Image 1 (cartoon, rainbow, N blue to C red):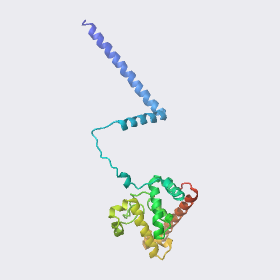
Image 2 (tube, rainbow, N blue to C red; image 1 turned 60 degrees about the vertical axis):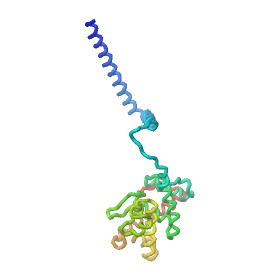
Image 3 (cartoon, one colour; image 1 turned 135 degrees about the vertical axis):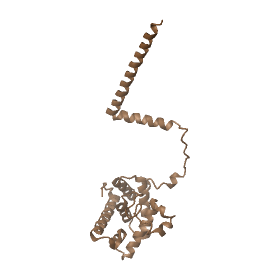
Image 4 (tube, rainbow, N blue to C red; image 1 turned 120 degrees about the vertical axis):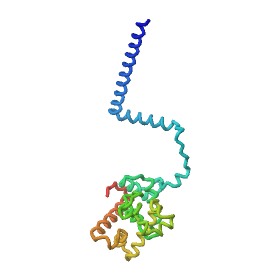
Length: 237
């Protein structure tokens, strides 16, 4: 009996060792298969994500927020008139951003523009030129948001909407920026080109820089108008 016990233990150790080797080979083989077969890897990831979605983790509790949708600056592009929807999709594709928030901005530009005697495509072109459609951008000089408005210079206008932090609310930034652009055009005698130069920085901007900026805005405006009519292909500015 005493001689049998060591032999039995050796047998168990041998079986366990071989089992671990087989398990290691299977694991390695599975890893190689997942690397060589992307479709298998995607399927495995989908199953893992599905399992994670079904699993409840009691150590993490986050309160639901039913009002989140009310704060989101986004609409379905299909809800817009066809020309505006094509504009939104062109901007989204060109600047690699989601079409739903862009659709909300396109709609707002078409609501605000006529009131300020500005073409909506002009507002959108300035916005795209200034920030590449990113609402949280900030320049070295401190200009913020989609239209790159200076909160300190235009504090009163932001106060009307709730304070300086609203510079990062996309629709508020659009409204304030469009109002500033309207004032620039009016102050410079009503010409869009002079208004754009004043919006950029006025006399502080040299002629070459101003000409480049104006040319870029006008080119984008023309591309938007073409996209609205024929759904023009995205062009990286």
